[in-house]
Length: 328
Image (cartoon, rainbow, N blue to C red; front, side, top):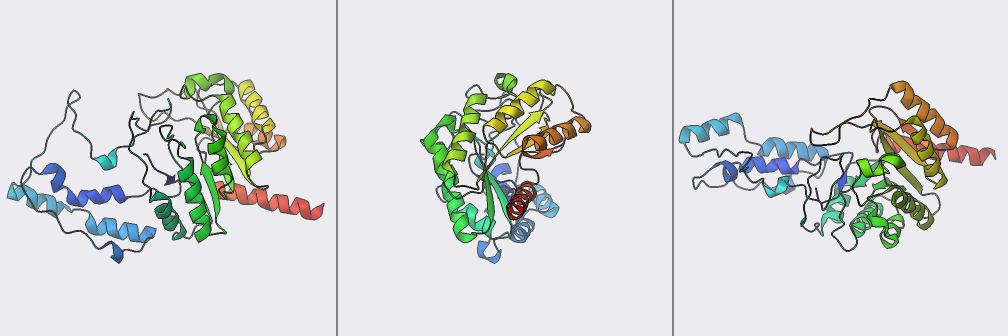
């Protein structure tokens, strides 16, 4: 996945290729079906679903191919797997030990039209709050910060009232990249420290570290206009102790971070870091209460993820701040 994505909706566009299944399964020279008129489908979720339903092959289509003997199926092995179509490749320069995203030493360049396309798509969905994110793109000169900034700016032009959260990588601590995103017009600058300070080397990519992540959050707060929130998230169940969690919270709060979330780490596959412990709901609740006492807006629970109820928590914070200012 080498491009920006919205957490609220995952595109089904890659599935549209299924309507051209003969290109992947057929060895015969069969004609491709005609292209759909994309203009017949509005750029909305309903439009995407309709297009998927119209273009997907049916069981009858496969039965007809079999009766015509116009296809053959290749079988891959572990030693000689079949190559995946390009639209399925999720390539990034490096990877975390907890993240199920494939890596590549030479990922393809980002789509220059993507900021415009993403902004127009999101603007058509009628959302009040959206989270945009990406994989690390350390291979790019600006590490993808320009892509973030352009997307936020275009979306704010189309929907000035929409609240935008950008969940960004650490940009290897590059202040220029952080400044570019922080000044783009977003409402929440989010970067995840992922785990407690003591387990950074165990959990995260070797190029990431606790101090660098905190520095990024501090820089974001300094560069961003007043009123912009900073946010980070921690996975629990990686082998941390309660004392380590509390000390990490104290350091994060000292860095001026406004919002913190806690969720249970879940192992994506057997190739990834195993779960050390399943944290109880009671423990999550204690961290939530402690975080609130420290001054954070907090979401804490086994099923909480970094963008869990992002809009609700941000809006709640705004309302409470306004009320406090009014009563002062």
